[in-house]
Image (tube, rainbow over all chains, first blue to last red; front, side):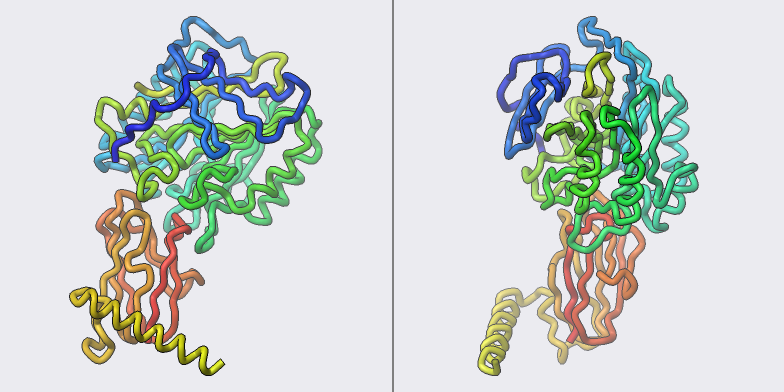
Length: 330
Length: 120
């Protein structure tokens, strides 16, 4: 399946920065979409069916534009260690390239979020390899949430043993950094026939309590594997009970939701909530509905790294919203 | 009600006849009297089970084979009747259905993948 439509779309007014400034005009415009994709040379944006896609056409550095944010961190996702099929026979190499990219960032990230599918088949050796590779990252502070590929065969027992220290339930938790409240959620457990991702009652109850005490001006970053918005339910790209989770976050002035799972970037802004999905470090997946199934997408070898990448997130001084920057490995 | 059931039965008979007539070599067409206690194949491909509904006689073993580049599982909806380990590419799972009934199942990794086995 060759992706030929990647660069179609409308060239938008180019900004160096993708910054969803919810408070710019003081109006909550529900459903309002804004695309400002970081890129050294340009950005292409496609708005389709209420979903915004942005493609960065080049990687770092960004022409000397450096961030002087208060907090900078990186999201990586879907390393699928152990995957060895034609779509990418070298997932070790591309994860290494992602780590090189992180280490080359103009501002060293405070920490890394890994939004799941660390492994391909939940094999101990696969987790070991990722852990070993991540030791080369400039920051040793790494936070994980599981993908469905990390909890195969054992209901997530191994995942919890490796990454779940200090977490609740199936591995959910929260922490604070520089005044930003981070919440890691698990939506890959106890999936039901015909359903989507699932958070479950116990986790939802915990989330409600977790954010209740926070000041409404506290920026919140929620990260989970499967998108917490309805990207494409036909392919299972959504979470059944995400609306309830988001209802607890509605009172907050800045909420950023970071997901993986779909192996491509997508953004959507809804009120004060910015949704963003990250590229995989392993293999691309087709755009919603543009292939018979969401299986790994085979592209010419010289294009592969342009479809894989990392996401850099910055809290910019004086702004409530966070700047989310995608950078491919090309 | 009786008439409605009769129409329904006839529809099922006609549809079954159509399927058997049209796809002679398909293992699906094996009738209970022909091949008791046989083995029937279900393919997992493009994130779907094929055929999505399969009718077999009691005692039939079904062999699922994963033809995708992505792992899948075969799990009954109740998660207890049958449950495969994760199946990587080309790996297989078999289960023998001894009792008549309808068994709905899914892939617990990609729960949008649903299918059923009807045992007569």
